[in-house]
Length: 440
Image (tube, rainbow, N blue to C red; front, side, top):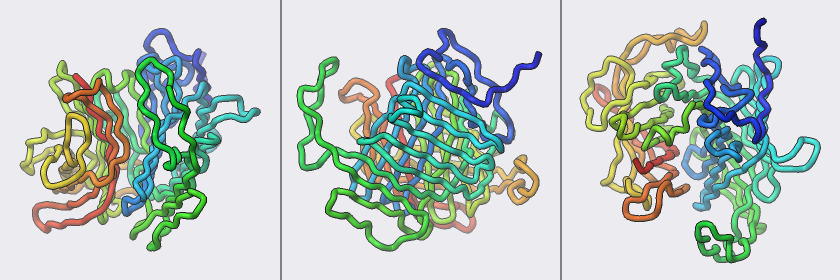
């Protein structure tokens, strides 16, 4: 008897399998938004739905990552949120919930809700709603006293869905896709930040309860608008700050989807996430570096678009010292930079930014569907971008403190670069990076 494919995945703390489970298969030319462990989550696996957006002038940014993480049992379901305002205020929190429900509806629409209580009673909820044609995605928060409001993505329709499992992998068996590669963003969010009129509490020693009362919070509004704005962001007298997207293109962002049978930190020592825009270019990248037993091998999933056309789908990571132009396949090289400016974090790396060096092989690639012939032929060339740390966003340790301590750093970056060789160009823009280093 054939097994019917489930359309609802409802997980609770008791839904964690006692032993590792295989995922359901990758589906070509599909967003793969439905969970890969739909009935029981493997204790070693993690699934992620990542929504982000930022102002095109770098003045404000927001990310929300919906996790199902078996390694975090008995609390495997959480939403990691990071927000940044034009005045430099940063906010990072996790919403931890006992339930995670993802459903497929008629027409392919996919919804997800992470909630603390049943829908019939008040509680904390964070949800997403992605259209079946991937034209829009909406994220909604209802966590009174912490975060409320919505973020909406409207896809620009850039080629993105992989035709093969290999095109969907960021490392062997680890998947990283971009169902909405590039989107215009509108957000109206209210987050509750620590009242700056009160001094921050001293750090709490591990294993001990806080010795000071919590700092009072005040609401702070974050607005991202896709319509261009040339006015300064107003601040009213009620401690609510509005930050609007500015610049020629207003805002940009996207939806990433990932699933891994093993939490990436168990196999990797370094990770780099990038979303950026400079002139006519949009670039997205996720790169991992394996641990010593795998010879620190870098692996990557990256894409470079120019005016909406995919010119490099890089699935090959080149060594940092590889500076020649030769390549037989789309590829990318990343390198930390230390001189020439850029803020530096307080962990071991200490770099002021990164260089991203895309290569286009010119080879034809398989199109997703009819009507996309303009994207079938690849483009041969090289495009180099330098991303400098301009605004510190988040900083979280990944090891014990000390001179060799490692961490997870988030940055807003100033982007400069373009095509090199032939008719060279230099364009500018902004982006966000997440840079994580672990002890090996």
